[in-house]
Length: 162
Image 1 (cartoon, rainbow, N blue to C red):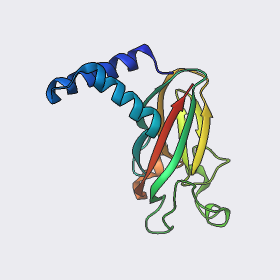
Image 2 (image 1 turned 135 degrees about the horizontal axis):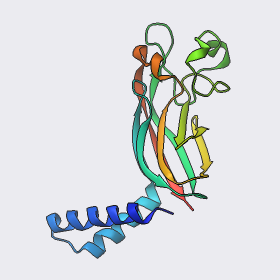
Image 3 (image 1 turned 45 degrees about the vertical axis):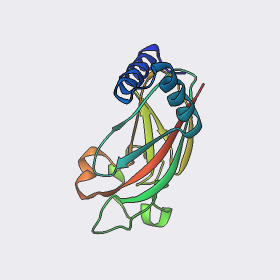
């Protein structure tokens, strides 16, 4: 499910925190693994930044589920309302400059993902079957040159299974 490098990093991190807490590395690693599989990873994604690393390394065949938890963002704080990670409804999306979209078939303001050069629409809830190994990145569906008038952030939950 995760690469050996990512697993090694997590084990090293868990062992280091055990030394500080006075616990055994084995119990911390088991505890961390149970928490990770049960609850997933929570991450805030800003509307004001481009691609943001989710802190998750995936391999081919992994199933990544991403769920909107809370928060709101906008692609233009002066002209358009704040929305969830589902993006703008069609009647508002049509009024926004269409050249700013990264994924042109999906509304502005929707949450999108990528692993290397593969792009995916997530919206409020999405499942991605990963085709190649790499780090998961997330952002608002609004191009880099159009981020200057954006505002807000959304929090998502990420769960990876193989």
